[in-house]
Image (cartoon, rainbow over all chains, first blue to last red; front, side, top):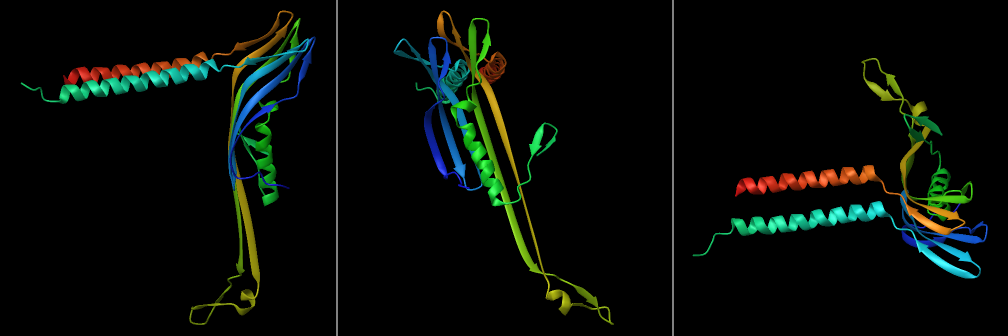
Amino acid sequence: MDRPKNGVKIQNLQGKPIQVGAFKVIPESQSISIHFPFGGFVYNRPIAVQVERDGTLDRIPIVDVTRLALLGLAGFSFFFTIVLSMRMGRAARPRRK
Amino acid sequence: MESKGGFQFTRIKSEEEGIALMNRLVDVAQPSGVFGEPVTVGDYTLITSSEVQSGLGYGYGGGYGPVQGEKKGEGGETAASDEAADRMAAGSGGGGGGFSAARPVAVVSIGPDGVRVEPVVDLTKLGIAALTTFMSMAFALSRVRRHR
């Protein structure tokens, strides 16, 4: 039995096409795999679906709204911390006459 | 596989079993691990898509050595038995642990009006994160005002 290769691997994969009526939907996902000699970690997320109809191919991206909102919150709190520390530093500095 | 308190335990008896477990982790990295099976409700077919993360670690070891026998002498002193020292004993063991988590991201809806992707917003997660952020910001702001 082959052991998975050690290291970090990022890959975009396409799943099996799903035929529903006139639509052919092909799911796409992105996986990040980290393999150690005695363990590993895999993170996999959907990125888009390709829709084929009457010979035309459209790609609809899948947006993770929850993750975007969390990143926005993290960015806002980081910005707030920077502004607050700058203001505290200015207040602590002795004023020139 | 044993199940106890919501956790699942697997005995890893050899390296082969450990590698088999690792290969099951590779299966999680496939698109089939993210997109669910299509479900048809009326005119619509729905496919759920989730963010999946999974990790595991395992280890095993073994050893061997001479059997340590004891023989009491007349004066109470101990001495290794020659007979026992000729014999060898071996032992081995292993174990592992892991986790897996999934969160729905969106639902792909295929209907008469076309294909649409409806996002799934985790309001509980966002609410807890927002509450924690704003409370810590208010706490920091109140401390700054007090020091002025």
